[in-house]
Length: 279
Image (cartoon, rainbow, N blue to C red; front, side):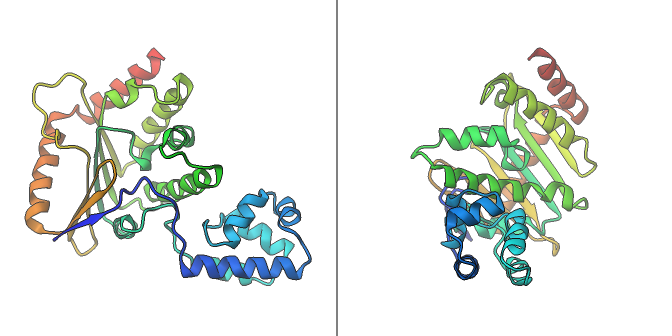
């Protein structure tokens, strides 16, 4: 089965019953305490716009927000308990959430990217540059929500040490210097750091290559704990979710061929280090 989906790296964060309910509780407690949004924001050290976004169910509350709100609103424990029942995919397009949910329990995750550094490997500065460049333009609240979603997903790399992560990245993604030299330098340092994790493999697809099995575009695949495979491909304005074993088989063969065409793990690290030294 192939299911149309919305691109996972775009779109406004969607509200949900749990987010709206949590926000309503925050608003009720704040008003009971006699605080305006601006006054409450000053006490929890978040802007009044962030407070409004949380109360309206448009933004996933940061753990720091929850803790500070508890302290300001009486330390009843209600917000801590309620926060544990919120969805963990803010800022993700609705249909991409199916993939994101599978991602949180996957035992294997393969990613090939030719357009941009994958979200799991991005630094905050790099990600914010992408959000700033997006059209139609995002406002400050949307950018904050997008980064919160991305940072949350990135925890998978360190919180799931038994999951095997494989990334194949085109060399030109670093040569483009998205965000400038300093952003690229930080990005290279970050990718090198992540590539040193035992459960992470990063391979670079060289800029000059006579044969390339990935010319059809980016590709993500994962294996669930019950050994079922799924795939997700993104495009400009949408994405495709794959669960048909025949389709998955084709995509797995392509990925296997790309792994053989890319630089080895050691050569990939050496290339990244050289690029870092050239900046």
